[in-house]
Image: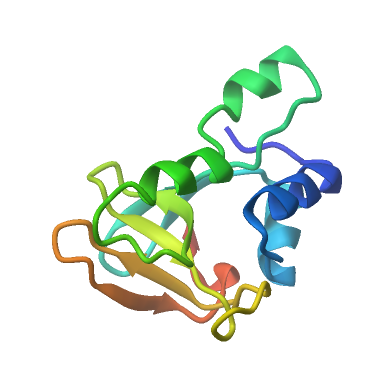
Length: 133
């Protein structure tokens, strides 16, 4: 169940990961930290930002963007610069990529990364273009 998020937890994740999340993505996550989404071809669940405000939110956000990105980077073909933002439950991730090489700013474009092939494919221009479930 999605719930609002204090912006300070986004700032903590940005510092941890060394990136700056896109404005539209931040706005969505401040309103609803996580939750189900769909692309044309699949159903996804957005990873939340780690919310340490109380025990209930800690348990609800323990599979946060930072943790899931670190785990995904252990896959042999996961893009080193990608940030995992969602999963389809089958090993694939929705990811954000930097605007350009060696840039901290992540682009708005949402990509699907497929674990079996290592391919990435654009699925949306920005988070707001995905279908909320």
